[in-house]
Amino acid sequence: MTTLSYDVIVVGGGNAALVAALSAHEAGARTAILEAAPKAYRGGNSRFASAAFRIVHNGMEDIEPLIHPDWKYLAKRARLVPFTKERYANEMLETSRGHCDKEAMHVMFDHSYDTVKWMRDQGVRWKLALSKFFSEDQITQDVVDINPGLCLIADNEGIGLTDNLWAAVEKSSIDAHYSSPAYDLITNGDNILGVRTRQKDGFVDFKGQVILACGGFEASPRLRRQYLGQGWDLAKVRGCRYNTGTMIENAISHGAQATGHWGGCHAVPVDHNAPAVGDLRLTDKTSRYSYPFAIMVNKDGQRFVNEGENTFELTYAAIGEQIAKQKEAVAFQIFDQKVLKTLEPRYSTATPVVDDTLEGLAQKLGLNVKQFVDTVREFNAAVPKTGQFDPFHLDGLSTGTKLAIPKTNWAQAIDQGPFVAYAVTCGITFTYGGLKTDPYAHVLNNEGEKMPGLWAVGEISGGFFAFNYPGAAGLVKGAVFGRLAGQAAARRAKDQNRA
Ligand SMILES: Cc1cc2nc3c(=O)[nH]c(=O)nc-3n(C[C@H](O)[C@H](O)[C@H](O)COP(=O)(O)OP(=O)(O)OC[C@H]3O[C@@H](n4cnc5c(N)ncnc54)[C@H](O)[C@@H]3O)c2cc1C
Image (cartoon, rainbow, N blue to C red):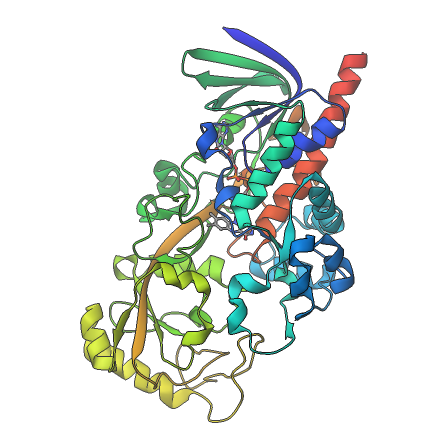
């Protein structure tokens, strides 16, 4: 058995892990990263992400200095109001129905801006998210309002984010061990002494303070079936294949406390032909988030959600589950010619079904033709006759109380053929249940006490999100707590080395 000693051991190779490792290294710790994936597939779900970061800010005066010089020109076309703690807190409380960890949430708000600034100094290139959700030529106004919660994105998205963080790791003296899945904590009672990895030629023990940053259990069909329920074992996985919950189960078996919404997950509409597990050639390009400007129907030709309840980033993470509940876990987003220009650029990765008539479209899609045509007619009869469609804001174009399932914004008649349909299914992003920590990422045991030498950051920690999620809060959560845990673990290692 080989044993290697470090000050700080970081388990995982995604955003939370890389930030934690860089932070521990900056604080003077001899640091190692244990990544389950081989080098070519390092980076976890973070590599697949759009890499938008939802941070607290005071408007363009805060954001402009973060933007990489290559992208400053876009700032001239954008108007940006502040994104306040109060607004963020309301979103977190509403989306989680009050089940988020309120103390930890405020720690995240307080550190979100400084953390992305620090990441810029580590080499992450930031830009405005303006051209992600609309292509530059879709923006016809000289100046547009950008969504203040969804304004910051890494250049080249998750690939750029993780490449730049890994580049910073490689420039440092941090040791990266690939194909090194952790499978057991080395403990003495509640004290964590290190972690055991399973490698090709045997087990290797790593001694030091342990930061677990190895994701949720979304890539395990067994745990999905066990905790999320029937049908979830067969769901498409949007990200990497490595987040199988091994260290969640292992830490719990050593006395760590489980917390949060174990029956819930972040799941979104994805292309019906998306691969079973994320493909790095496609990353997030199979996501289908333009449904607020469409209607969505199931195989019976019936609507089943309020497509316009809010801007997409406050509804999309809960809509995947609604699609999963439909027959064959399939739905169809139906657009007419009026709104086609609002489609996110990534729809170009699929070939839609198109027909001049609603009947013809329904036949091609294999829907109940009469029911589908009735659904569209009923919908068209309920849309308001006045008002201005505005894809950049909640426009209040609502069907009101005329339909059993209303559409409360962007409700326009589907009446200008040819009609266009995209088939979608449910794709799981990450799970909400995980390890219980204090508000600074220190893992707590079943009795509510800190487990000395153990931190959990990123999606392995539970109790932060439930039911739904404000878009782009996942990466900032991982980065903020990763940075804090890296500092705390380095401090503890220093104290132990001194003693
Ligand atoms: C398509 C897509 C788009 C997204 N877009 C956004 C977005 O724009 N903004 C946002 O905030 N969030 C987004 N997310 C969510 C975001 O990616 C996650 O919240 C974030 O990546 C979680 O980071 P993490 O470091 O906790 O986990 P990950 O990045 O998944 O990293 C986990 C790491 O742990 C490793 N690992 C797993 N098990 C072990 C083990 N036993 N031993 C060692 N290593 C192990 C994995 O290989 C991986 O490297 C998106 C996700 C997807 C899939």
